[in-house]
Image (tube, rainbow, N blue to C red):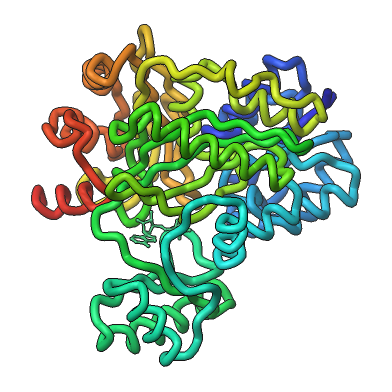
Length: 447
Ligand code: ADP
């Protein structure tokens, strides 16, 4: 087992990882920017190293500084959290070259999944169902038209190097295709420095359903069921649930089995999430994230398994603590992402939190790094906390969530809490009847 883990992240996820390390008796080092000197994870860590000024590129993305911090403190492993360097293959390779363990998959696996064309090709080879589309990059208009005619309109053009929902264009007719192809390519080139794009069938009303998987790096793979993250705004997840209100046990076992076998075949190591669009009973692979997800706590709530413990165990060579048959799903869980944003316009609302009171009681978990008197720096993501509620079934979970949202107090800044108070009383949400466009339509209607 590791002696000392360096946490290369900030905010709630840095604290989340720190808690897991403490429970495993592992010493912790955190790195932070000058803007985060007062952060909770810095206060609670055994050691901290300031690695630079506020902008992420000079601090949380500064590989040299982070490697130097490992060497100075003698850390033998790095947990990257999510975002920042968590899916940076070069970072994983550099750590390996310094004999420091990256708590995550190999650089090669990160690289494959970071290139969406390669990821889709790999998924297909591993028996994962994919969205019908081009067999690789498409640059010629003639070929684009041929592929689109074959799969049928509407189609979506996506950047191979894409991420965060950027660089995607929908074409509903052949006349749209020419413009869509040209704009998608130039936007992809400008945003990612790579203008390779591919074409897929555009699904009109899918749900976003993702499978939590783990590989032990030695040919064993398991799945921890799915999460439904269909409630999104601008492709950003807002509310997540486990399990999905749309799946039955048989579908769960079938797609879960496919995903577990795929990570086993790949020789994948650590946590991963295989994301699908789901429509009319069919799953369509869109991408694989090779890291811990923001929404992992809903899976922890219904399985009772600490996924960060598992990541650390696997990375240290100790293997997974569970076999597939040990993973049982108990009840229902929902996570609300609480952002420091205006609940209507979603513009960031940094500033000082004058009062912070979290709900409690059975089935309530709040993951947050903020506190009364904390000043939210304007440089980073606006996520300030996550409310995770567990109940014996979805109805109990929703009732408990409503109660917990009423108790939650964040004063001094605007947050998205009022949005969740509206959603929890909505009949479509109560019925689990929503797709990936539901939230945007709801927001437009209630403007
Ligand atoms: P990114 O890596 O940029 O997040 P994804 O491939 O995960 O890109 O897609 C992000 C979102 O775009 C999906 O959650 C979905 O809302 C939409 N999307 C992607 N592919 C399709 C498709 N074939 N049909 C309909 N919507 C899609």
